[in-house]
Length: 137
Picture 1 (cartoon, rainbow, N blue to C red):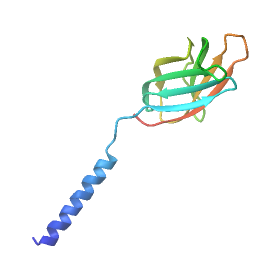
Picture 2 (picture 1 turned 30 degrees about the vertical axis):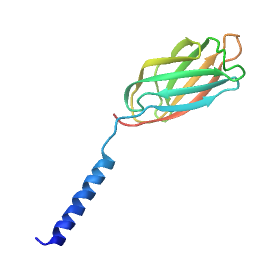
Picture 3 (picture 1 turned 90 degrees about the vertical axis):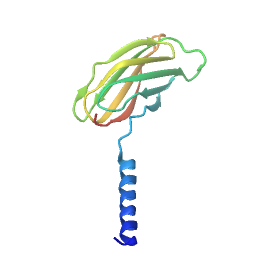
């Protein structure tokens, strides 16, 4: 074989290896979503935005007094409006931050995370909706 053939084969092998490196699946990374209501800022971190069990960490802060969070009742619902799916709502009383460990994402596609905050003062509930794209398992 001539030198040109060897150089050509080397270039082809290098290109194939580079494409394989780029296309190789990587482990999912946590994503953080931000939203808010009139009185609260809401941060949701999704540990694994893929089909299956995952964990959601919810942080609620009062816009007027972020240093002193009160205990609020927080309900988290995952809804897939295009397919009519919804996971059972999870409710917890939190003071600032909490983690829901067993959250099921049953199929790939666009989801909505609906966070409803019920203030302890008896004021009306405040709701924030955040979009989430769930990829296949």
